[in-house]
Image (cartoon, rainbow, N blue to C red; front, side):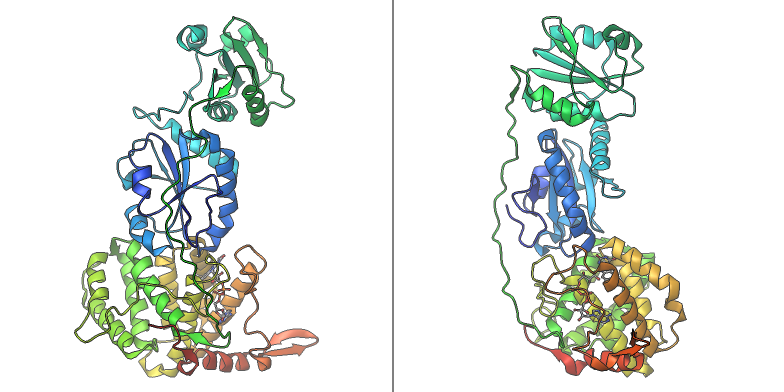
Length: 518
Ligand code: FAD
């Protein structure tokens, strides 16, 4: 079924999994699964999506030995399921052996770079880890022995046996084996170059190279232009008598779920919207923090600092402010070094009589942060907005503050401990480690965040995470703040005093619009 707002569509060779299908399909399955858990708002997931899609197309015919799936953890409906599968950052790839029993049985697959070949080889290595629960549809992948080849046609009812002679570290033989699993009347085995008896018997001189044995006792070298996977696969699939077997080429469609297309909400770029800020709070506290069943050590500290600056400086509606203060009090009274999220959740959902039903709405509503497509903007945009606002508010309430690094430190801790886009967190931590502790005043803190955000904008401009309708600009652009821009020796310079004045006005309570808050 379609995943509303997701990065993938039913046209991709992937199984689109949802809360109701994830466990049902992936656990106790006779197939192995490799699942990408992603968040549609995460730039690195957007960046990775073409690779994942191409990989899925490339190994589509390895199904049903192994299936590829995706889950959008940014979809609130899937949030609990992603938590249950232990997902704390995006994108996360998890391999589930056939007949896996529980969400914990998944193994994280590291994806260095974005190479399809590495991922494909990693799938093979993981398939080989199956012991007693070998996926029934998966052909043997281990190298063939002399004895196996000698008796092959007596024990296997096929017309052809293709032998791929190759070095121990080559994956081609196994790839061709898997490429052919949906085809009948042909089997493929790899033979190691160290298997001297077979190498001699067939007169093999180059590795890799392929030989075709026929059940009438004849054999010949497979004539390919290049000794590469696709050439062998192509040759074998076109042999007379070889036909596609009973496996359906793609998996059965899941029950489609209603796609809710959110209408575009007109927004003024010179304003800040409370709906974005409250959605950020909701997503941060109820989704991102919730991914950790138990908070310990650094995360407890990061959460406390975050909630403290919210309680002090968030210019929210009165009931939201009361709520933040009560969460802050509760956290401060927690002396334990470990906090189960369930305990925090009770505090977050605690309603007092006469209070609005649920302080943080269960829906996220993006207004100033609404993208032209659901996977653009949204949460990360609102998180930036929230922290800019907090740095500015801290300049207005200096007497409440504990120093110039109070808000920046809280942001650094939050991003490092909880922000689901882990590569964003790494980048941000890099910038923080480099210069954050040189910030000497609350005004400089506002400017530090502004200039680092502009660095991120510069880095991301023109990449696929950029919403074409909201290009990444050095901000504020001249139409928003003409006085911020100047020229010295015909080179652009920022007037930092003007920028500071602008930021203080832009991120002030008077500039926050309450439209679309419930
Ligand atoms: P955003 O950049 O999210 O900006 C939101 C709003 O803030 C803008 O609409 C504008 O009103 C205002 N604004 C813009 N620039 C400034 C500024 N300099 N000062 C003050 N206000 C400003 N994505 C990646 O792909 N790679 C990364 O490494 C990465 N790192 C990130 C690190 C952090 C800490 C965060 C919060 C996000 C990160 N992101 C990263 C996401 C990315 O920065 C954007 O948030 C996302 O692409 C959405 O972009 P956007 O167009 O909505 O504008």
